[in-house]
Image (cartoon, rainbow, N blue to C red; front, side, top):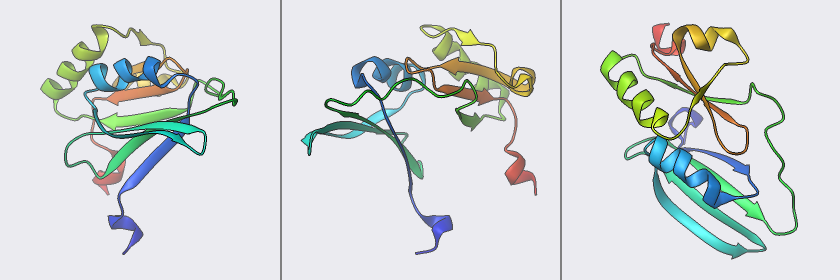
Amino acid sequence: MELASAHLRIARPTNDIDALLPFYRDGLGFTVVGSFTDHAGVDGVMLSHKSAAYHLEFTKTRGHDAGRAPTQDNLLVFYLPDDSSFASVVAQMECGFPAVASFNPYWDRCGKTFEDPDGYRVVLANMKSPCLEQ
C-alpha cells in the first residue's frame, strides 16, 4: 500500500479522556468509533468522521502524567473553504468552547482557534488547504 492512500491515526496521551470527549465529539462532531480498557494498563478512545481517512486516538496510561500541550502552537488544522460550513462548525464550537487568540496571528486572520482541555489547539480555517492549490 502506498503511504499516500494509508488511513492516518493521530494519537496522543491525556490524563482525562472524559474531559476531552465533549470538545471533540460535541464541539467538532467526531463520532466514537472504538475504545479499549486496560490494554496493558492503557485505556483509549478513537474518534473519526464518517468516511474520513483519519482518526484521532486519545490514551490514558495508569500511573503516567501526560501533562499539557508543550506549546500553544500544537495544532490540528481543518480547512473549511465553504463559508456556510465554516460558520456552522464555528457556531457549534462556540456553544461550549470559546475561541482563543492564536499563537501565530496568521490563523486569526483566516479562521478561529479553540483549545481543548489539555491545551492542544484546533484551528478551523476558512480557506482551501494550500496543499490542494498546487
